[in-house]
Image 1 (cartoon, rainbow, N blue to C red):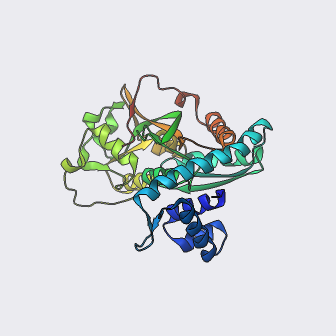
Image 2 (image 1 turned 60 degrees about the horizontal axis):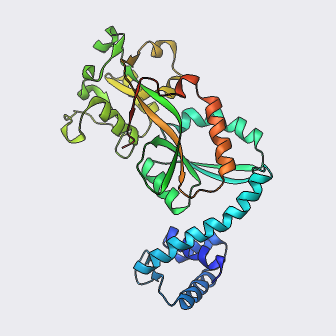
Image 3 (image 1 turned 30 degrees about the vertical axis):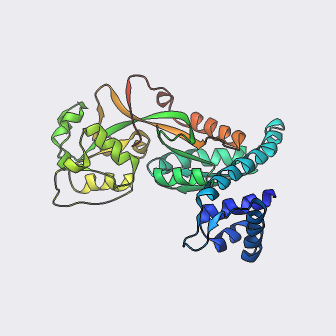
Length: 312
């Protein structure tokens, strides 16, 4: 049994395809298959059910792969310990970020981060919360930046800041006459929402205390995963939407005049760096956390009298 063989079965479990796993491991598919067969012969078990497509682990194979992940993780800790001791930050950092955070946070932190840590290669993907969770569990991501709490036992959450929600109005909205808004003021039939799969949609529904199944039927429904599109729909049509605080930075003076805060307690979402429970690259992830803390406004670093919403 070798560490390489364990890495091969982890790759097949991750990609559920021998050819793709071989490509990711930079070996030929026959080489990968032969080494996995040797491991199965050594252990006296079948790790994968090759009769199914995509390939899946056997019941016992799932336990073997879980242990393999733990062993590989522990072996990588040795290199990590040396890097931390030498205060060396280098290598890849694979980060998943939800789309309602990425365009407002990343452009502010990437230039300084890459300048301070030139040996770190940032690799960033915009994913939904569910995609980030799955990729963290499978090892395809080192960390995620997303709304929490998630209540996932296998993941570790590092709360970083608390982002308030605000109401964004059309010029014709009757709520323009109000200084502050409560959830009771919001007409659900006039509310523009993100489409299914985005945690912010569920948080907005939580604010409005509306169940998805109880929502009225709109004459026109627009499905989008973009906060910017929500702004445009309000600007060019009518109605209202609910926006995260960081997305307000590029509003014009006229647009800013159509923003209304919620009355206390203000609904907020907790934004965290999320890793696997047994995560590596602690030094680089800590550096990323530090850069975010130095970037977001001081008012976002504390809950104060705010109502933190669940991510789901």
